[in-house]
Length: 307
Image 1 (cartoon, rainbow, N blue to C red):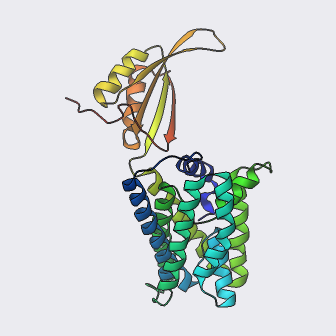
Image 2 (image 1 turned 45 degrees about the vertical axis):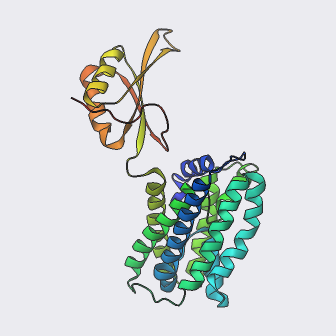
Image 3 (image 1 turned 60 degrees about the vertical axis):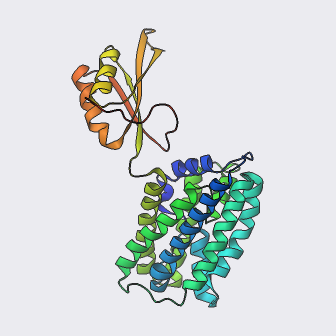
């Protein structure tokens, strides 16, 4: 999967890398079963997005899947065959560069995707409306790809290739993937038509946003850093009014050399406005930095009840 991921693709790539274990970690049978089931479900969802929505309407995806769609259309061969063959080299690259668990998860996902697209090919398109097909195809495809990425695999070799090139070229992973996909989606304009290429961009954008939501979840977490002379007062207000735990850190101003107290906490996106209000009420001149977090584990992040 891959093209409007360019704006935040690098962040997503980092999330993916966290899910791709470089060292071998022993997995319990239940964890292996859970991973297999969810990767299977994700790959089937992607095949539904492709064969029931996008491919019949000549709308393509980015990356290796997009190339496979074009080659399938030009040769008349099965889409699943091209997806499998073109991704095989990236299985070996992933095995060497990222790890055994990731490579095996990716191979398994690609096999399921190839089989599912072949079985679904005779099924008629769900809709002939190209805009509806692009939007809903992108949503279904994005959920499928997001699930596979979340559970340690990949359904497209472009990301692996971009990581490889990133080590040798002065471009980020996101920029390399953007270049690949501009070329692939541009090719769709020559093979199909330019309006189909533009619909492909819509489908890709929808899929990218859906992947992001699937990986991070709707309850997206944010880290907050506050530097203030009233740090304790702000921290107490956050604990009492938001029910979130805080951590006090000690810092030193590089310019002034003064001691600074820093408040650190993690909130969800729905609490951001309330937190800003708390900070402003207690110190209008406080320094506030808010950043997205891909994942939160351990500690006492769970919100406590406010009485």
